[in-house]
Length: 96
Image (cartoon, rainbow, N blue to C red):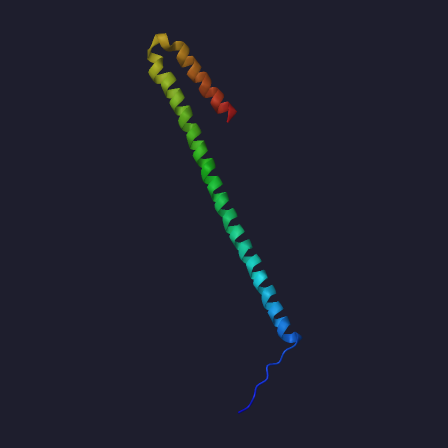
């Protein structure tokens, strides 16, 4: 029966150190990939938010104008209310 001796020395420890360095590098690389994916998702969500905000502004403008012009326009006593709604619609549009 032959006895196999395990060699020890700096070479074995260098391999472990290299493996640890490689693992750290892979960890950092994976975090960079995850950060890039999160950034893309955030950019997509921001674009969706901008579109939704524009739609909401259009809806408010349309409703204020419709109520003031169509519904209140037929009632002479509502002239002041109608005027304020139209002014609010203009102000809202100008501010955003």
